Each structure stands twice: as C-alpha cells, then as structure tokens.
Amino acid sequence: MIRLLFIGDIVGRPGRDLVLARVPALRREWALDFVIANAENAAAGAGLTGSIARTLTEGGLDALTLGDHVWDQKGFEREIVDLPNVCRPANLPAQCPGRTQLILESQGFRLVVATVLGRQFMGPKVDCPFLTADALVRHTVQAGQAEGALIEIHAEATSEKQALGWHLDGRAVAVLGTHTHVPTADAGVLRGGTAFCCDVGMTGPYTSVLGRDLNAVIARFLDGMPRRFDVAEEDVRISGVRVDYDPALRRSTRCELVTIR
Image 1: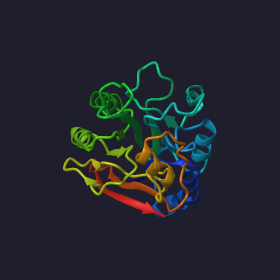
Image 2 (image 1 turned 60 degrees about the vertical axis):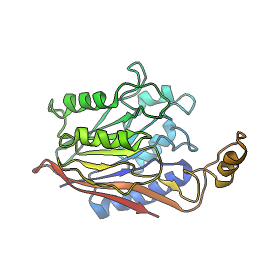
Image 3 (image 1 turned 120 degrees about the vertical axis):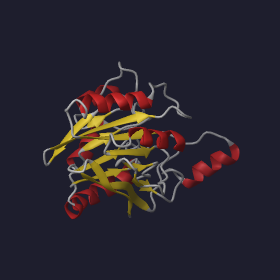
Image 4 (image 1 turned 180 degrees about the vertical axis):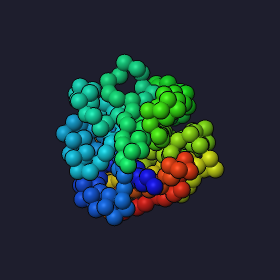
C-alpha cells in the first residue's frame, strides 16, 4: 500500500512551524511514503522564498506545490530554478521558470506530482487545466515514467474542481483541490478509483479570515479602505487529506480529510 499526506495551503510562520513540528511524527505513525504540501502562502501569507522552501523540505516534506501567488515574493522567479522539490503550476505560460512536475519515488512506486490553476474566477491567464492535466498523465504515467499521478487543482470554483476529478477518474491516484482555504466535506474515492476532495483546507491560524488578521479583514469589508492583512496567530491547525493507494488494484482505497491542531 502506498500512503500519502497532502497538506493544504501553508499560511505564514504559524503554519510552517506546526508542519515542521508534526510532520516527522506523522510520517512514522502513519507509515507515509509521501508528504506533499501547497506552500504558495508560506512566506508571510503570500508566496514562497527559497530559504523557506529549503527549511520545509529539510523538515520532512517531499514536495512543495504552488498556486496563483507563485511570484508574490520578489526574486522568487530566479530562486525557483534551484529548488528541486518545488513545482509551479503546469499551465502557466511555457516561458515561466520552474518545474511543471515532480516525480517522487518510494517502495519502487513513482508518483508524479503536478498542479494546474483553474480558470473560473481566477486572475492568471493560463492554459486549459483539463488539457494540461491530460498531457501530464499521458507523458508520465501512460508513457511509463511513473506508476501514478497526483494532480492538484488550485481553483476557486467547486464545479471546476469536481469536473476535473471526474475527468481524471481512473487515470490519477488523486485529484485534490486547494486555494479557498476552507476544507470541504466531500473527501472520498470516485467510482474509477481516484481519490478526490474539492478543497483540502488551510494549514495555519483558524481564528482568522482565510489565515489573516480578523480585525483588518472585517474593517476592509466595512469601509473598503486598503489595509495590511497580517497573518493571524491563533488556533493553528494542519488541514489535509490522507490517501491510501493500492498499486495491485491500481486504485485508491482511502481518501480521508484530516485536521491536526
């Protein structure tokens, strides 16, 4: 059995600190082969830096994915090329720097990890996530470069995430949604054997609005004035999805939403 944990958007230092404190023990307790996390909000709540990426991977994470905040930190477009465990969204323009996928290996099982950005209600102009995901699976799993694929869809619209899950059902180990920072109650295994969850949630402070200071966000809604949205600090949790995949059956057997305070 291949076991993996996918951790939802890490927000700021509170999220990073909890991940670093808990992941090593979780790997042992759950006999995890892979631990993957979305880290696009890991640097002060917006973007990622090279030093933070290295700290997270040295602390027990096998791979870091990114989303629409990929370029928020100044100079990260230069740093990303030297980060072997980090991949940027695969459907960004081809000239963007960074890896479009990662291939991890455990027990002789090779897992390709990739992210696609949704196009509904999202800012970046990107290629079709469905066609991009198709090509990723075709050029890796179907071509024999990997035994399975985990496709993250970083998107706003629930319908777009569900549609991609069904589109890849039976062809991917898992299709897991991120971006909205709120875990959804639909984690499960689709009929073709693909693990799916619309949004695996946020890893960070939950006494907040999407990880940011309550007072600042509420005030912005009240008067519309621009404010600095500092990362909150209270009720820090890891939110993610635990997936078990049976290579003999070629299907996932577990997809369970997990919350760790």
